[in-house]
View 1 (cartoon, rainbow, N blue to C red):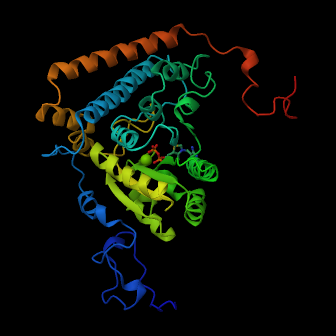
View 2 (cartoon, rainbow, N blue to C red):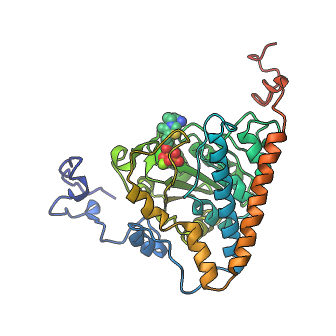
View 3 (cartoon, rainbow, N blue to C red):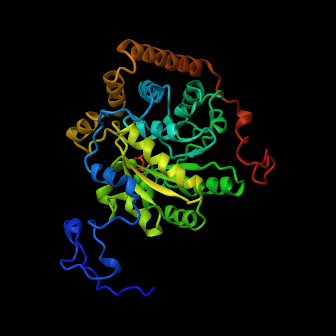
Length: 390
Ligand SMILES: Cc1ncc(C[n+]2csc(CCOP(=O)(O)OP(=O)(O)O)c2C)c(N)n1
Ligand SMILES: [Mg+2]
């Protein structure tokens, strides 16, 4: 079909780009405006699109999920938060060294996906990576020991905070190079498709990663080969101290999927139910052979980028606004309002988590450091690779 020729739209300056559409929209293919049905956004989520401008963690009047699911979400998210609060404290005491990026505030991004996927699906993410394996079932002991760089850590004390791995729960890391895990996620999905396993890969990234070239190459191939992959951008508004608005021409990041005709949705990720539903829809498509989905999780990190960031580039009001919609508080509220459990039941879960976290610290403290002969192990598959010399 011949493309309809359209006059170039006037170039938008930075300050006016959001309202700079040409006055008379030209006829033809390029005349689509925001008011017309979105060809990429699945109809089922049209409401979510409208809602995500101002995400609110709400208590549903009618319950969509079982009591077990709500309690599992509560427990998983509390474990993530309490574990990381402790890690933050220990970092302050210099017991944990090096880099340490906390996920506090973003917990629903992981909990809602765990409940929507199977145990055999594969996971990969960037360096903000403590919460994913915790929710997948990696022992808090092994993660805390890794933060302490101890031999009993899940990466044998050689990876640290940014390189948590656990094959047992299909967690493929833990990657420090911004965007590197995006093509790797596509590659994992390729393997699943090639081996006809019926499993998929969920690949998380930060908003900083969507401006990496590797993402675009991976998106193209994933669509071309209809790979069973769910790409998730955890849009917490900032890449280190730089806001999305200052670095991206396209600030509704899910629109980036459109260039590849990839089904793409915004998701209010302060709300665990919304996360579950979006991931479940994407998983259904992936398993039906329809290929990838790009989900933009609108979320927020309460702490700075890393432990050395006082986060002076944002306002107190902005932080408080997100805190007031905290996903854990929302789930707690739902559980209590719908009598799924009592205050005492939740307190018992909190106590259990406190003990688990404490145990992980004791385990890490009392574990040995790796020995010197570990230095060249796990670097190359081939142990006598030419670059390794005595
Ligand atoms: C290729 C590359 N460039 C730069 C860096 C330095 N760096 C580390 S984290 C980061 C910001 C990434 O932010 P985002 O993707 O939004 O993830 P978030 O920290 O918000 O989870 C940058 C630029 C890096 N690790 N890799
Ligand atoms: Mg970010």
